[in-house]
Amino acid sequence: MNIIKILGLGAGDLEQLPMGVYKQLMQAEHLYLRTKEHPVIAELEKEGLAYESFDAIYEQEGTFGTVYERIAEELIALSEQQQEIVYAVPGHPLVAEKTVQILLDKEKEGIIKLDIKGGQSFLDPMFTAVGLDPIDGFQFHDATALVKEAIEPTQAMIFCQVYDAFIASEVKLTLMEILPDDYPVTIVTAAGSSMEQITEVPLYELDRVAEINNLTSVYVPAVKEEEMLYKQFSSFRKTIATLRGPGGCPWDQKQTHESLKKYLIEEAYELLDAIDEEDTDGIIEELGDVLLQVLLHAQIGEDEGYFSIEDVIEGINEKMIRRHPHVFADTSVEDAEDVITNWEAIKAEEKGERAEQSILDSVAKGLPNLTKAYQYQKKAGKVGFDWNDVAPMWEKVKEELQELQEELDQDATSDRVAAEYGDVLFALVNIARYYKIDPEEAVALTNRKFYRRFTFIEKKVKELGQSFENLSLEQLDSIWEEAKKNGL
Image (tube, rainbow, N blue to C red; front, side):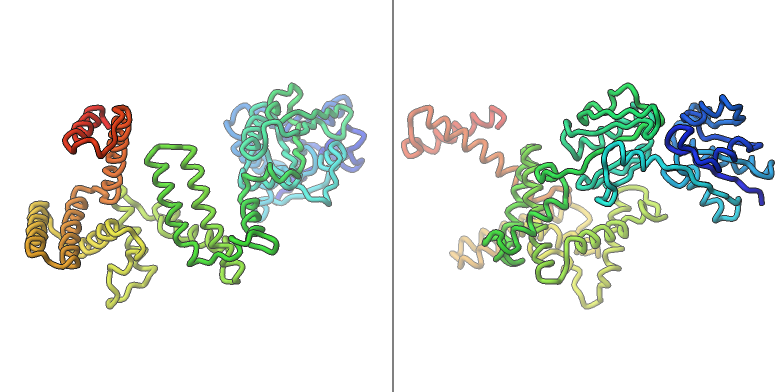
């Protein structure tokens, strides 16, 4: 098996290149460079260095990932033709060098054999340039493959491979979702060499600096101000833990799962109101209030030693992946109906439903009763207890209305009248289900309509200098009709 020898060109000038690496570069019969754009190469060319570079591939491929894959493929092909080839990369071969990582994977597969020699990483001169002691902790990110979720702003960050303004823009836009637009960042080009340039700019100007090139990295200092971390989930969790902890808020400290139940319901309905009003700011605020309830329950669980927010997230994350095999596995679906069918089948299997367990038991007991009626009927319908046509549903409504009228005519007890009235509503819910109308949402629409029209009446009565008591029902109804004509 032929060998690919990999050498590091270091981070700076020729003077910083180890003598052993220098000799191997100059003596190599078959030398290949990932890129010739490096200070050392320009100086070695004067001494007669012979090489081939892969720079042309950068122009031919659309992404850095495909560039690196292709370079690795060509190196493997070349190694099959020649007994030994030398591949030189900027910096240290094992620091931020994707092509080497690809080749290492191929070596594990037994395809090639590597001989890796060191070279100075750019990290040491980078630490010196920005005055960072790595013992304090830092994050190292590849700017060509950013993962926003991996960014931790409480630690200093170094973004390598900021090759051009486009990549700098990607870094900027990603960071601006986390940090203030004017947060100070440092651009370092050719760290440790005689061409070293250090420029501090506000974040929003990161992609506007002229000297960005293949030797550019970006340093972002750790965030110290708590206010800048408010977007971070960890900051919010810390806030809730503080409120519940020693020296925290007496109200938060005494809350239990039971005492918080009513607030969760209230916040959920306030969120629905904001959604109905298409109020974006309101949706943001109310989602925050719902999230607050989730975090409070999770913190109570953690305080009592039963569970934490990580358990909550793990559980729902695992469930969503398990119940979407058409996305995360190899199950095929045709449409949304197939998705629902699969979901219900998986859900039933998870719960291990027994024959003696009612299919209605899966409907949450705390649902609003119109919604619960809808869900009961839906569950019963799935096992065949349902009409196939709407006509008998309407007949059932008429039957229940007749029975209600009979109870009212007999001056029946309030409980019997209420029961018959409930039967009417239940039958109407069946009609709603047939026409795919959410009964709870339908009532909500009517409530909002009534609110608009009644407040219109209030306004008109005030404009007339009258009170409700001084106006007849006919007069008030006339104003109601006016509100209808106005589209309210």
